[in-house]
Image (cartoon, rainbow, N blue to C red; front, side, top):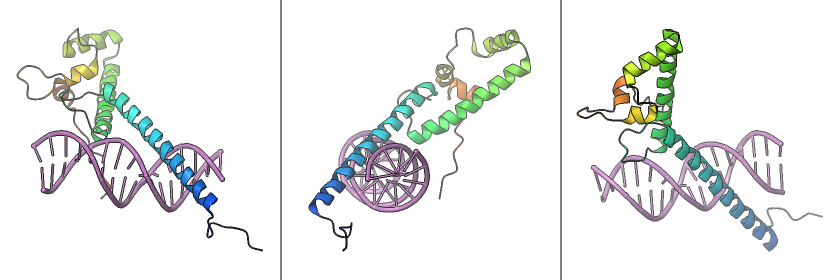
Length: 133
DNA sequence: TAGGCCATCTGGTCCT
DNA sequence: AGGACCAGATGGCCTA
């Protein structure tokens, strides 16, 4: 005797499948919302050249990568300079005493400057990911 | 109007 | 079996 299988969907089975699909859709929506929340948090800590337009997800990832690399370079420089005192002095020399928040600093445009300060200072630019063709 | 970006749905795959 | 993750398809919104 053959049992009922997926090749013979009864009304109950169809209903169950539809319910599971809807549940999966809802989970996927929540998952993507979580991902977008994470992107928003990342956007807030990453420099944004010109505050007018929100970075796209792709741009956010690129900017985060460039930013981390820039900060890594700064840390390496600090190590090279030796003591924290030397580093602080060098930092003030480069950035001025009142600049403590790097993203804002990096994104800031000086009057008459064509590009943001950080971009000029760090050679800060997009380093595109290899895109699948 | 074309192109870019995004949200959502959907089916497939892998893991527990 | 069910959940998480992923990628493709689709349609909506916005901007140049």
